Image 1 (cartoon, rainbow, N blue to C red):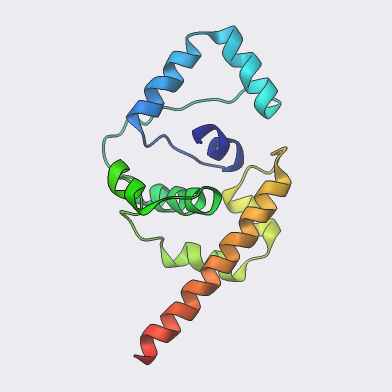
Image 2: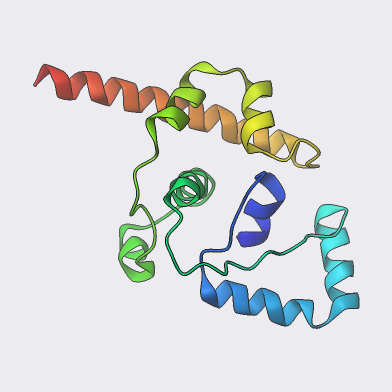
Length: 144
């Protein structure tokens, strides 16, 4: 899943120490890793370990939102992994998905050269729908 997000997003830091360790082990086999990256992405997938032990909420909440749009997350998984949805998505990011056209969202958040552009466009569409639901939810909450 980390490979998927790294291939789609402009910035996708590593939040899991376990995945970081696995990725490090893969890098030990440089030839095989290079072949895997090129076969999967069409180019080398670079890895930057998360050296900070501090939370990065500005990156984490967006990562969680994208992950939740791409993969089914069971409620018990949120408890088991104790990492998802700890930080709210900043209003400016929600507003971006409510208001900006696809090309601007791609420039801000996604790899423009991704061979998975159809996936990126579908993801943007789903996130725009989610952002609109947030707006509708906010309106309903205010009425109460």
